[in-house]
Image (cartoon, rainbow, N blue to C red):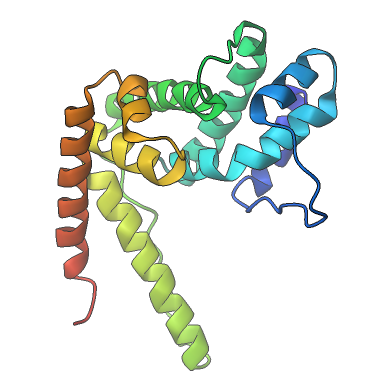
Length: 207
């Protein structure tokens, strides 16, 4: 897959990849990357489809949508550039999210230079809901936005660990290696992140 192809798919990056239902065994991530390096563009398409949702959500929960799209595209472009140096010594997801994590830090440093804090896009609608289902869907969407807001309020180290745990499929020891931390440090950050999110969401959830 070329960088131009990645560019054209960013608009649907947040969609969930569909899995095949024919029961055929799918190649592993390392196998797909090896096939791509031998010229099989379809192998990279399969690799991209398999992981695009998790990578996109990783950025979307930490960056504004436009920046998340750009960071998402940059991650896959960097993967293409570095694919030849990949060594299958651990999970491919760890390698992929290492790239994503580094891209995220670059974007966060850029954000800090531009503004101390960026607010989530304001959704103001004067339209009355057409029915109860619409009202429920709107309330759920608002709750999701509130959760994203609370996630973005977490300290960077806690936020990254929490999202990696949710989205990457990596174990805590792997996250520790990825974030250059100790296992106990990751556990502590994850615990504090969960406590802060629970506390932050209590004011939005009716009891």
